[in-house]
Image (tube, rainbow, N blue to C red; front, side):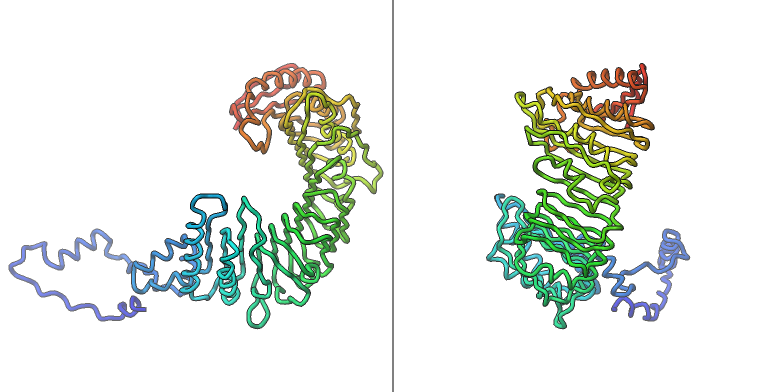
Length: 510
């Protein structure tokens, strides 16, 4: 480079001394002042162009793309450095019903096309576009995919959804992601808001480790396509359509994480010997898992009636887990408490930590809506080794009336810590808390918090100052009754109220 060649040029000849020039103002004096300012022993200044091209590209990737392009005007030797940038990320409008959506989208498309036209296509690591795309603009999608494939990108993220409107307008050919030899360097692929037609003849994704599909319409042999992705470790499918049954083939023996969220399927069946984390969110459907001996963590969020009880009974393959997250939406007025099997083959013998979120819809004239809260007591019977329980409750509305059902719970000899948010002294909450205090023999503390965790609206946590005194009073009386520590936490006030026995202490907390 030009800068490197200048280092080899002989130093200029010394300037002649002018006898008429005052002492201290000649070239030597200037050099002396310069050396005094910078240090006589300073090494030559560092120059970007002295680094290898691949190192320059890495440095440029640490800058925002716009700033990286601007560096081209700093020096003629820098003009093309940004074109070796290894990470390219673009963002455009995501909401269709905004005033300037069309204008902003056109700017994003123009920027992407301009950058990929000038880029060197060497060393691409990540190629990401997050921008809603109209059907008439699909020609640009084809161009972007060709660029990503020819550049041997390792990570491709194409999210073309408008978040406020779902339209199946962008058809993406998976074959286009392969190079001329029919292979791919892809390790991670995210597709959103597209239509794909997978089939078993697509064999080029041999090193693909992560596949995420969101709002994708699938028509074709998806199982056959997955069978050719033997290196896959993470598969996530969110609100996808087009499949009746989701079958994960046995060739995915390296799969460790599987997420199925909002899929309208009738059955889920998968073979994954190495699976350690399974997540399912949706309607109750048959879930068959072959070879799940390594499963350690599960998330089950069934919608519909008796979702909490079914999370403990409908998926036997999750019984070996150590960590369980469950969620239930209580909608059924006529629900009844369901006792769970307590035989060894139907229990969570290895479960140590559980997080449960219960959303309760209740009305003044309907008292049985909060029965899901009481159902948890029976669910705990199926986890005799449980050590930590976090329960997040959200009452959409409350009548203050509770189910007349009597709940019981078996003795727990390992449960040490219990946290309950959204606790506002509703009768079902009090019944459950007392049940835990009575039967958890080694319980170190019960922490209750009136604030709703994960509330969607600010109004959900209003009037906490009115609720808190009653909760504190209940905590003190109940602590004295059972002789166990009950902490009342209130984050909004920045403090914590602790009730121990018959004494209540208020201390500041984070």
